[in-house]
Length: 307
Ligand code: NAP
Image 1 (cartoon, protein in one colour):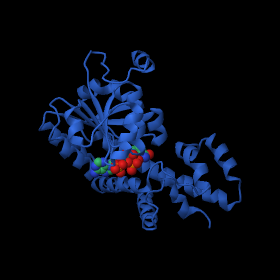
Image 2 (cartoon, protein in one colour):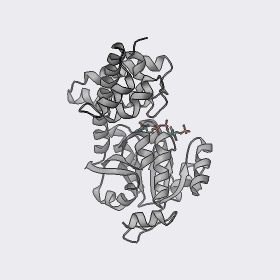
Image 3 (cartoon, helix red, strand yellow):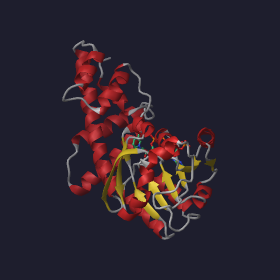
Image 4 (cartoon, helix red, strand yellow):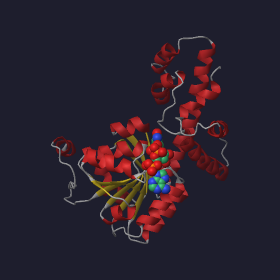
């Protein structure tokens, strides 16, 4: 109630929490997901500053949202109490963590929304603990659409007291927040999500090529199947584009491939069979070799469809 009132009055930044505490919020990584999340933080009245490796993106967004833009992550960290990260892979997260550790203020909270391994989350938390700063692994699901709408599902690992402190900020970008356990648990849950996405991608692309082979009207098939028990997010949001041969991301195939390699490691450690994931890894690798790594994961349909 309080949150909406503030947002609708156009209150832009440096907004107090219900306990009266002021926290300056900065966002690092304005890619497909980061853009939407940052915009929702701004809409909620929390965002103060942004940074992006490709500076032009950060300048453009900072102008649109009337927030500060920094040309280094160190400067952003120096001026922020809550720092969001949304970058590509494990080494990128650690590059950012190592850089911000130089200037971060004691008591600050770093929230990593990237999808990486649990072990990376543990390393990041340890690096920041040495600076008396807190870390939450907070990977998300819901796609670019969810990031834009502020309806992401967020899977949290870390200290529940730290989560309680930043929860009002997270609510600007989420429809659901779940605390899974200690540092790394959020990423462990995200790995489950990614294995499921691989299976769904296999099922949807295979079934639509099966429909294509029967000469059915694919738009009608997608519409009616979406309304029944086999309906799902991926079919609803990517079905019609993939069958038209459009594979604009969305979620880059190379990023899901990176996630599935993490899942493969967990499966080996736990003695779990994940054959659908294995098949997806090898088919993605084939597509990446053909130069389709920056396309949406629905480009798997390229392999399944009839020529
Ligand atoms: P993206 O569009 O490729 O954006 C990646 C962002 O990370 C860009 O802002 C990029 O900067 C930045 N970056 C990469 N390496 C960096 C480094 N070493 N230092 C600083 N910045 C760096 O990817 P995305 O789709 O937003 O995904 C971001 C993360 O969210 C990934 O971990 C992905 O797996 C996860 N995720 C994605 C989706 C989805 O549907 N897209 C859904 C859930 C989770 P530049 O602009 O300079 O390249």
